[in-house]
Length: 219
Image 1 (cartoon, rainbow, N blue to C red):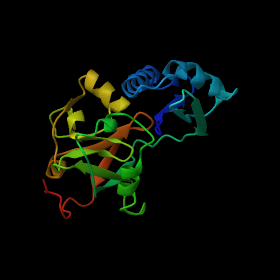
Image 2: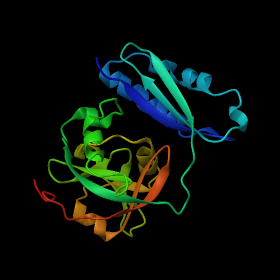
Image 3: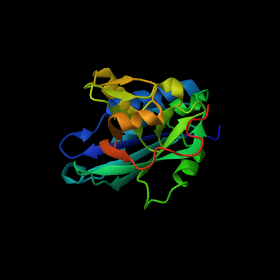
């Protein structure tokens, strides 16, 4: 199988790995679904990869990759959290996801569609790019989950059935009752405050710089 599973975690001084058990659980579920061995070694591998001075270090970005042969590779790098006033600029891609593709629910090395969507806009114009499915429904960003605060007090996020990753931050917010699944379309984004987020960075306030695009209402 020419495919690997990926988990990207934050290690925080004083508290350790953020959402560690949720990341490990997702990795195990995906490995089981795809018939891959080795997920049970992930926790030990993560701790073994920490630098000796980690207890006194700055935050770290830690990327774990599980390969089809059961091998695990881990990369660590310094990480600077975003400031609370950060706001990302969003664009909507022409590239579409297929809601019927089961692999979209797993975080894998198959990244061609996301890379294609990201390449539609220069970094100077967009901090993140949002993808739709074949029905014109909002799915997710290239590296984030999409959320909408419509004033109800509970964030709305696209359902997995739309064709998107089962994000770790997304799962936490759903389980805590801070978010619910809802089918969203581009026009809905003008009805509230947009957020994007992932387990590494947390929730990020965002603005959509252009809603109307060719083909946006197709399907």
